Image (cartoon, rainbow over all chains, first blue to last red; front, side, top):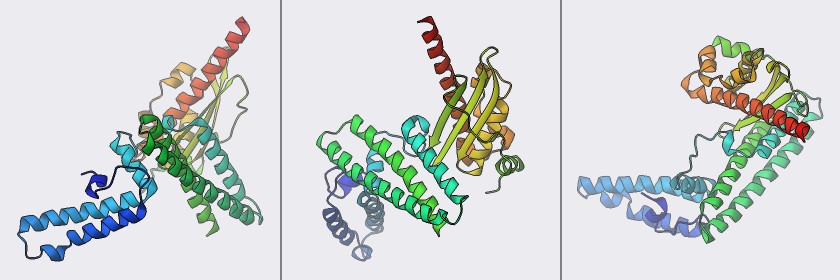
Length: 175
Length: 135
């Protein structure tokens, strides 16, 4: 079951969040267990299934990253098993350098904490920039759907995943 | 999850950590990564141009214990091999040697990719040099 059609929404990467929420509430009411308590078991089961899809779908569609991954998967892109051949070499260089800097900071002196905070700010900003770029690429895909746009989105999501890991690493250090 | 003794050995005492000058014409550099777990692995080989034998290998890996152990073992395996022998190294050898569990097999795959990337880089460099010489 396609989440977009389940919610009665156009299959687009840029999604109107309030419209999605509105549909979620409507459908939640529609499939609410209370309404099926007196119904035959078959109908009750169907409503339960629909509720499950509704909740899963809402979780996926309301998050721009998960939504993009969902569409990529639908279009036949392998999301879980990515290897370096899918990652641009410049990004690997960049992530490697960032990790090196992080390691140096860890082994550094008292100043390390301030530098780590600075690095944290930088990574968070990078993540925000990636999120903005994801929006822009999503708009482009919605206007002219195609593999090229999806490929770009996928590369961006890879990059974002690395950045997200770096943010988590630094936060662990700062905690 | 429990690591095998061999993984722990390589992890706590990694062999050949470091880097070589990537501009050295006899050095091949491979950089690979797995976005899903956030791992990045850099592996370098130094080849004797006369014999085609790998004289030195270095690595630096940011990742889990298995990724570090896989690349550490890879550098040990590489030394003394010819570049073509190196290309024939399979990740299963690393899996067996380190007794990696199924969920960590991708770490050995990453190490194999790193070896291939480093050798390919070396070969491209020498091909370019030869082209430059003939010009």
